[in-house]
Image (cartoon, rainbow, N blue to C red; front, side):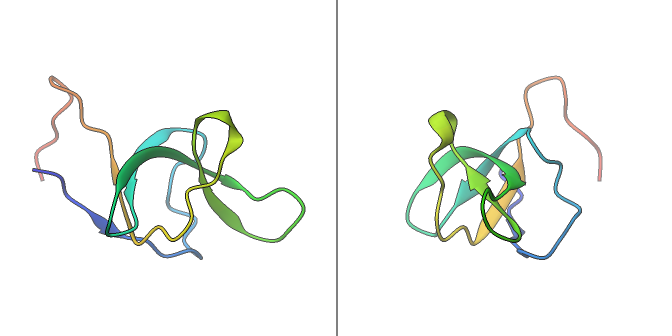
Length: 70
């Protein structure tokens, strides 16, 4: 099961430059949270520098053997 976290665009708790699962409620993809170039704030960037617009939720990637107990 994926534990989705509601995206807060002002949160600094999201590890940057690390792939995460993200969704806009319609599609799911891989993206990295990083500083927006030429403007204030952070955003989600896909492979090749394309932005993932409208992210509502995100989740760290949990690979087999990396499970955590919460």
